[in-house]
Image (cartoon, rainbow, N blue to C red; front, side, top):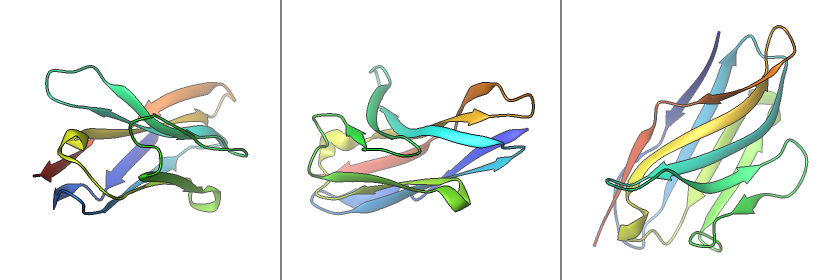
Length: 120
């Protein structure tokens, strides 16, 4: 079984920074794209950033220049460095990953979510 475990959320003032981490564990035979999504109260889940196993990251326009996604392939971990946070960044943040499992099929897995709250 594969699990994604997130950490690093919390409460921060506007203009502050947070770093989220998400580690994949279990029967993993390869990790393709990894990414972060977020869902604010009453809104649909939206993409924040994605990063392929080898290639350039992709960001939502709303976070470009403020957030940086990175990954450590040896640890099957993806990070999201969030700077210059704004109240509108408040949401539950979810990581996801496309993982090749025991039968070599690729499945998409999600973390449990971590709350990020930015106060004005």
